[in-house]
Length: 124
Image 1 (spheres, rainbow, N blue to C red):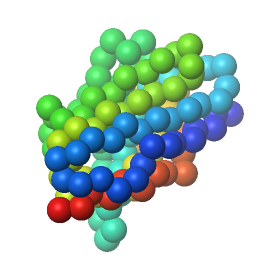
Image 2 (cartoon, rainbow, N blue to C red):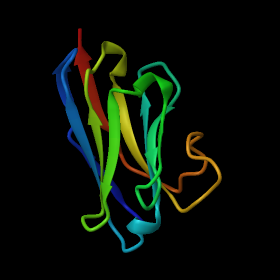
Image 3 (tube, one colour):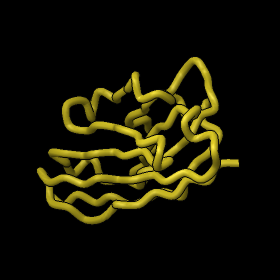
Image 4 (cartoon, one colour):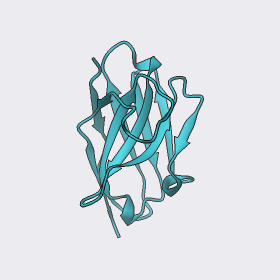
């Protein structure tokens, strides 16, 4: 069993930055693909970004390319989402997710564990 706890959300002005963290319990973190999804009010959950177990591969939604980066520290069982140049439309609850493996990374169904979410609000 893996438990995920997100932190770092908050209120920021457009153009600003935030860094989200996701701390994972368990000893298998280093073998997990980690992803971030978000859900804005009235909208479906959408894929944001993901990183392979080794950190060697990263995957981005087009909407965040060039602005968001993902990294992981397997020694600390933590994955980070650095969000720069934030826009009003980035406002959402951000969820951390962990996948034991699969051929895809952006649909959501391949993730086995989910965090509770952290709110990110960008003021225009």
